[in-house]
Length: 581
Ligand code: ADP
Image 1 (cartoon, protein in one colour):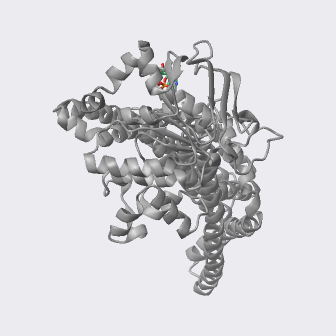
Image 2 (spheres, rainbow, N blue to C red):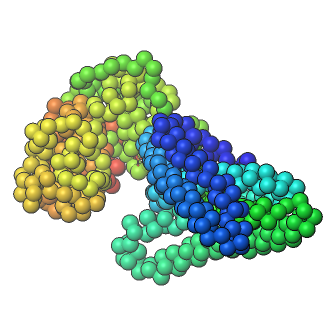
Image 3 (cartoon, rainbow, N blue to C red):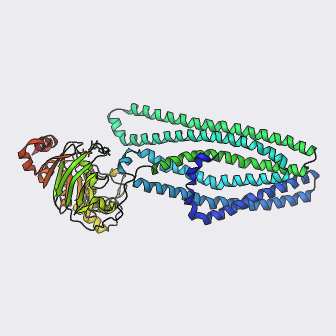
């Protein structure tokens, strides 16, 4: 009955290996706990007739003995539950951490297609459910199954004919349970998918609430949200209905079985095959059986639900990963920043190239401005330089080292990005600049000075220790950009990739950011996706990209004189700056 779905949980077993010691102690407690049931059943077999005969001393003696056994049993149960909880929780923690590590290396293209809300749900709710099921399986299902076996063993010993008759009923119950189990799993999977979709929509909605308000689209969003929650409710309802149906059906079969046993027991007594002591023990055994059967049934449902969660977690593992580092990677230290692209071609879909035979040569310390219409391939070029994507033809050389021969982390220490839209994690300003790198406070302050950010940071309520709120909402846009510049120059990269911000800042903020950039760019090779006239005017060379090809190159003055595509583009793209100049 566990067959198709069990494999998922079985794959978690190796994760339990480091906890074998604790598990062994837990299992020992479990054996003591389970082992006490046959003793209690035997005692019950003597207690009921003693009660009937009114022998008080014997009754008190038996009760005393039962109390001792109970005490040991409950102590063992406590040991079992507390010792087994740890490993189960550790396994789920490990699962979560492994999946998160895996998520960090998912190919960026694939990552962009994943929904943040959905992933959040998987790594929180689904992972919790898996942990719960694992815990229940170890500390509840397993002892319940053992209890079933032990009690059935005693019952077989007491009256094997009667017990065999009962056991014939068992396959019917098992069949019914598994029939429901499979349906519960499918229904649960559907309902969890709905919650994930809901989380995805919520993520999008919360991000976009101001926009929704600006377009007065509240009722549209509300309708969409209500549609989603309605589908979620229906999916949940189906799961609940199945579980609701399962309880009475299985329960009725159990009760019918109990009555059948009573009738058969009476017949066995009448025929003299069983005495009253035996029947008392036997009936106690039956009562003791009900509890583990209920536990196994319930846990089986939860097991199926956990299975659906585990499946959803495992799907993260199937996302394509970043290509591994080359086996004999070339170690690099500090580089000069000589950059060369030789006949570089690349397409997200290889049959549709986005960059075609691009040749570039930038000397260390030079500034190269990339211009071109939207979709020309400028950002894609950046993604190749950071090795987010791999060149399909040609090669990129940094100080003569082929990028594909370097370790990704080494390369990314040399190449720093200042993105168009700054994102920061919540935490202190110093942490935002440091971004996980082992840099001293002086290094952080030095980077901030270069980025023209030191003054404003010191003026913040707690200076470098000031906490940035989510997305840096408690500092201004210009200040956030300067933090991003400081973050980029902290490791002293030789190549700076700068995607100029398009959103206009006020003149004063703009001047502060420009000063930061100018200082940060000094002495480095810079590739800039230019959106300002001043940038192209000051660049050592300008490359015009169109549909992935270099269609023109030169300095601003030379290109303007030559007329053609650059001049057209300049006039359209930098229209505001041209008017002001
Ligand atoms: P630019 O930065 O010049 O505006 P991009 O490099 O962003 O241009 O895009 C170049 C082309 O590649 C566009 O046609 C765009 O649709 C496509 N593209 C960009 N990113 C991806 C991606 N992750 N997957 C598939 N196609 C992409």
